[in-house]
Image (cartoon, rainbow, N blue to C red; front, side):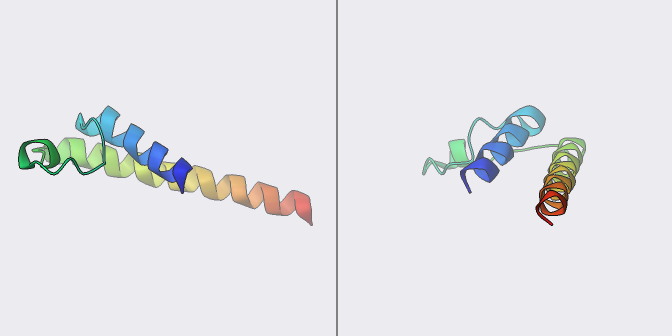
Amino acid sequence: MKHLDTRLTRIAQQHLRIETLESRRRDSLDFHEVSVLELRDALEAAYRAGIEQGRKGAKANASDG
């Protein structure tokens, strides 16, 4: 799960300008205004990361069998 958290944090930082996905218990730090274009880019990056991870898993399974 650590790998997933790291990947999602990196996407948030790069596409949404959000420093961390950890709760900091302050509205000014935990709520962010983002444009729909930034959100779309972040969702696309997460989708592509999932595809990449799936392909890695498929290759690993193919080499096992």
